[in-house]
Length: 208
Image 1: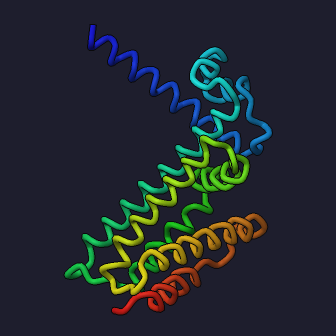
Image 2 (image 1 turned 90 degrees about the vertical axis):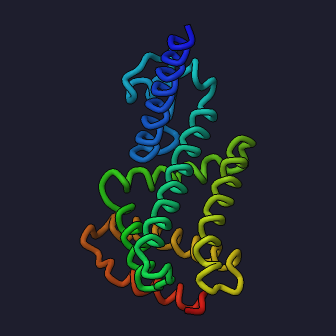
């Protein structure tokens, strides 16, 4: 009986994830206004009753999609931090290496499927502002990124790792939005300046 219950729970979770992923795709391609239970069900390949069972309102679907994109970003940034730290000689902080890593991450989010998710992320942030459920998502998202940033910048020599993390996050946000807009009109727009720009920023924030 317990095995059967676990299987049902797993199937329910997979269904929920499919609904959320479909919502992200719709938001990226057609905007938040295009999200309806019927449209999401069609995109996810599930029954309409499945979407209404898991999410009673459009607002709940949007908040779940926001949470999914936020968690995905935090996980990827955390994995990047672990990977760079493991590859660094003696654990030393290298602004150039970090500049390259962060630049590659920013550029990747302006291409292909990653671009869709990035566009959805920003649209969802704006659309869900002020919603009680989304407020908690935004706070947890910011706190998680803050933890990663302080974990990296503190040992690197930053005199104010909490503040410097906010500066880096704001810079990355600006770069992503700018690059999305730039590549909308020119897919071949140069991006080789991003890594040195980020390395320059990091050098000003830490003592190495």
